[in-house]
Length: 621
Image (tube, rainbow, N blue to C red; front, side, top):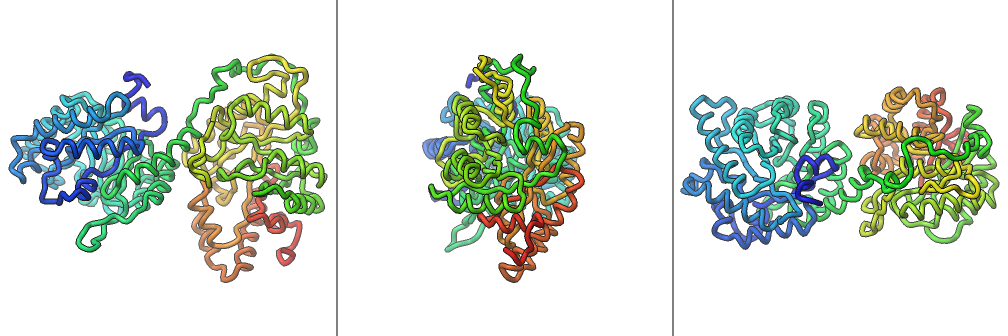
């Protein structure tokens, strides 16, 4: 990346900016206690500060913060260092700049003065303005890329700081801290506080940091999304501090912080880091989680640089949907569809999955859904699984094709192979990043996303390969795509869905639907698309299973009332019964509005899926 590209605004536009963790926590671990002026260590122990900066960069963050959180004249005066403010800030900025080099950003950290006055008079305002101006000018002189105002408790003081430091012309990220009631320490709701701060043109991102752990901060983030369109910044503590054998410790594990970082990103945060208690170990896990997730959601596929154009390629007219497969014929005729998802086995024995497919065929199911590496797990090839099922069970399959694991050449080869083996129906998906699965160190390819892969498949159906070359014969695959009616960024999901339609999609299968109102909102937004909707259905098997779906599966929202219903299950049998009842209710509500249903077989139990569809009774499971 060139230096021209390496600025905060460009980084935010590209999808995700990962910050470092706590400087104070690291200094505390090195034996420096609160009676030490941490900011002065940039002058007296620069080698230690450099080491900490480097540890955070090695963990994978995009920017490091200067060691200047308390380097204003008011806080420095407590240590008799008010006259060293300029030299401390310049030294800290130059030190961070030297460690960051040309490949990482440096944030000039500016904290509150400690005056904690929600309505400062004119004299105090001038003093505050002068203090913030002096600190920001020194940081700018030292070479920072942007200014990070953090842990402010007073909206009034934060506004004064913004007005004072805006003279540097550097981008500003403004963050407040709040109570567990999601109010500032002076009782202002965070929505109101952030709405006021976001109005400043110099502020490029707003958000929350400190005081709260990840769980409470996630709730705060959801509220902030409603009051501003500016990028949101989230830097939680590693949980709440505890005193253990005389030391203050933060108890959140790196894995726990990383899981919440994923949820922050899915709920709209674009600058994510850590505050008190966060160490390089936390940032390393956050980075491992967010990088592939952001790449999967924002990657610009290589295929758009090949000869695949926005307009339809000139090629042979594609085979009509009704003539492609039995599934295509029913979709074209508007007849109701039922399909059941069966996951490929972990080994090579396909006997059980074939037996389940035969049971589905016997009960009139139209097709078997075959996922491709669900939740980034490694199983038998879905292509082999689909072929075995169609050969032995006399039922069509819908083969998922995932962009995660193969480059664009390999994906085209698979599509050609699918046709050659007589399979007819595909569902094209981007795929879960490897970090979400059992092999977090695997590399996600993501040459293409689902939109680009749909263009490729549509081109093949017209007799053209990815480079626009004519094929000896065209393909006639039915092209399905996924949709998530409860996506946290609904406008983005709607836009991508429209892109999939333009790319050549012929039907859509949704993520599991648990909130019908959110489904109807999404369907209304795309009502003129003309694509048949097949609604995803997941029958819960227990309260634990419902909690897992709610908290651990990306793109799934489970309403609280359903969790409460599942919590009443006293036995395993109760859990299955209530879960099937809920699934049947979903199907009944959605039936007049969709082309059919794709029901999952939880833990491979196909009878649960059949019961949800009303093909067998619950007591037959």
